[in-house]
Amino acid sequence: MVNNSNPTSETSSMRAMNSGCSSPTIFQFMYLCTAFGLISVGAGGIRSSSLAFGADQFEKGDFKKSSGLKESYFSWYYASYTFSILIALTCVVYIQDNIGWGVGFAVPAVLMLFGVSIFFLASGFYVKLKSKTSLVTGFVQVAVASYRNRRLDLPDGVHNVCHRKNGSALVLPSENLRFLNKACIVRDPDKDLTADGRAITRGDCAVSSK
Image 1 (cartoon, rainbow, N blue to C red):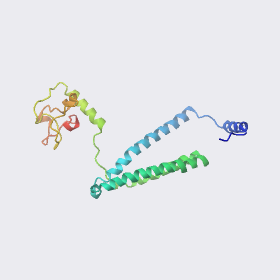
Image 2: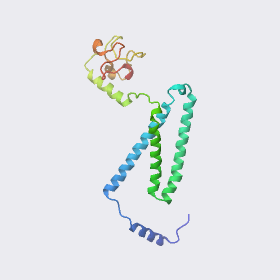
Image 3: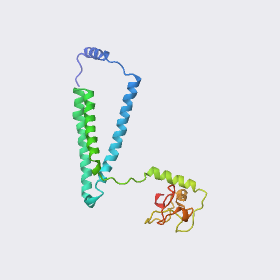
Image 4: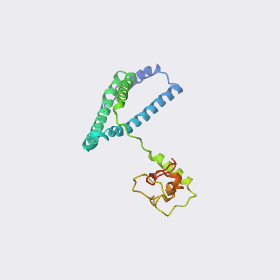
């Protein structure tokens, strides 16, 4: 480690440089923190969904028959992600240190805008699978249905006593978390079930949901 031979001159030069800077206002500081927060939320959402959305493109056509293509996709995805981090920690940092923070933030912003534009221009060619009920939404639905049927007794039979999806191997709910089993009860088979055994009311839950 090399000690600074003249710390006094360095301190005075730093004071002279900082004397021309004014502190940010509360509004400016809150604006900056809000921008950083939105960037964090957006980056987290893109990272968690882009990988799964790319894998969905192999679920139809000839791609679905080859599992090797999906494995290759995951490998190239993580390789490109690592390469992008390397670029961010070298080139972008060099721009920020030698040119300025404005240009340093502008370059990634322009690249992101370019990537988003290409993504939306090709949106008509993507495979878009139908969304399924999320785990949290399904749990809340089961809890609400169980509370609504809390005064009903669990039936002893097998047929047309619990809601179940057509073709499902599950006929009765499991013994785990028995307090949620009432969410599947069929109150009136003539009114609550369709011809193929599905629930007419959206609030009713199938056995496979529990």
